[in-house]
Image 1 (spheres, rainbow, N blue to C red):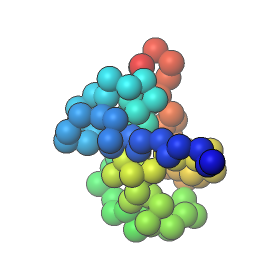
Image 2: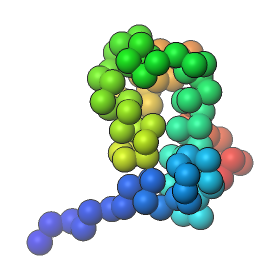
Image 3: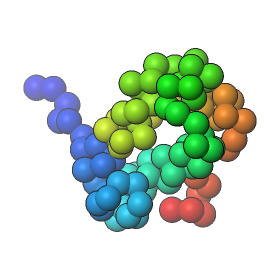
Length: 93
């Protein structure tokens, strides 16, 4: 028997994503991460940011939509490429 599928951040948060805080603490961290990424994108397109940080635009789109949990490589690429601290601090959740 395989591991049960965990819910996605967007499924654990209020609508509309990512504007409404999540009651689930893990989903709230993911939501705050997405809010931080969007702010650091500073109006640039998903395609241009993805190319700049060295990742596929579909990966970035799915993270921004809350349809994927970002892995460490994705977080590190975005923080380095956008020159910003994107992971929410412990006091934020």
